[in-house]
Length: 387
Image (tube, rainbow, N blue to C red; front, side, top):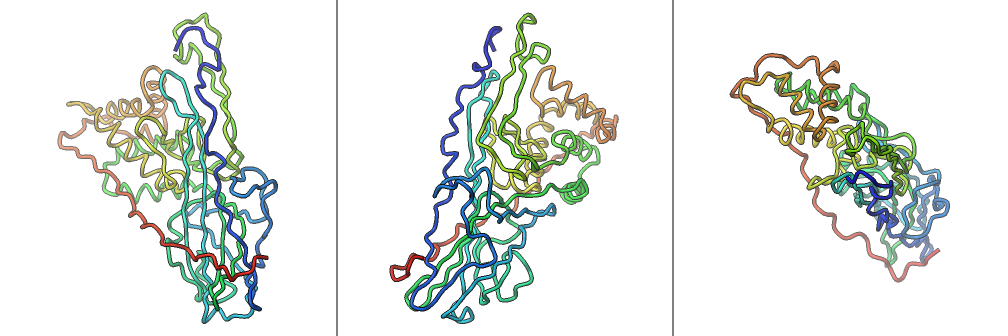
């Protein structure tokens, strides 16, 4: 960093290309040949100011729901008006597609930043032999999920379609939904960590708990909209070499995320672990929307990239923890201060002063199996009548 610079020097780019590339808008074909299919219980209006294919980030319609703190997709009740056909013999197909375009700034080195984004998308499908059913619920025996399930999470702007192919026509309706999420409780996170770290050395467990409690206070999601943040680059924090230079306060702004969306810092630190998009580290939809995957990824980063390389012969657990904590937060004075804070935390103080065994081994936590790609969705029907 030069000794003399302006706030603009820190920002190389603020364009956020593709930030408004939303989901394609389906066509409604509500009736044909005396038959009709229409969603009745959900708000069928577009979000205020919505343009077809855009990404709604502000006000929304009444269809706002949230993923539970226990990390499972919310039950979505759907009631359709179905006439002129029998869903028992002609099942209604449903399709839920969700997209979230996450925008923040990446540190490209030397305290300079450029705009960056990730496009997350996930899909679920199923069918029902009843006009009233529940997606992700267990109270609809006539409804089944045919692709993905409630254990695969994601929120954002979603489009829920219902469709039926009958007598040469495809009837189709859809609604917009916004899916947010609630934070896990500390007890939720602790239970997950206990399961994942079963059999691990208690010192390693304490090192990990200290990081998660400090980084985001177990906050995977932010209850308020997120659209801007500021950062002061100062001599006292080690950002430049000349104490005579004034502090440089930089404002970072990005396309807004609505309430109950992933808690992401201006420099792309995501969720509970504040896993950061930098260098060769990438962010997935699971890391952003499933706090369990965020925790698992953060643990693996700490174990393999920060903890393991810091071990030296004769080190105590406490010395090893301090070295690894500092490496987890970067380098220099700020990293050492971070390590000191964690060492003084309730979890950090549980780390032993005894020597680390020479035969100690570190094991990574395994990721869940990936889903296969879904097949083609129902085709448009030339004989259907658009309404």
